Length: 198
Image (cartoon, rainbow, N blue to C red; front, top):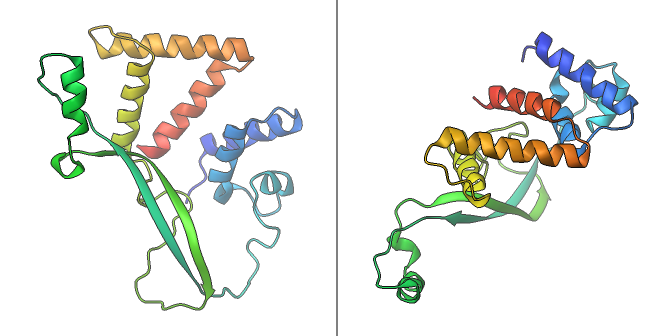
């Protein structure tokens, strides 16, 4: 995994936020996602990224089997033709889950049921800490859908998507101003996340 100039610059920015004692939870999460790009001797960034001190040392790994339950929340939109709102609500209550073809997962929860020593090295699901396609992990289509839902929730109802996006970004800018958050820094960080996910 190549460490680009952009990533090195971002790590130095995050170091400055740490030293200024104003690093946010989102920036800590970002630092954790960049942990593989932090040099082995950089104790400050490694500690803030939550990397154990013995990273890189030759430790014998033990095998464990982890049993997980995954419960998924999904949503769908359907069009109902009815005479009035009450009739539409009544018809909606009768819809069965198996009648919907295009459920969109939007949230999920993983529960650890059991951890035990040992395990077959056959074909267990592989844990991918820095991304992957684990159930419930949003993909870019789901991220875009969630953005559509967020825009709809804010009440932006212009005819074109561009106007709705601009209005929503302006609202977020107002929120940043009120909370003393640098909107430009958030936008830059979001762009880096977008580029990493693209």
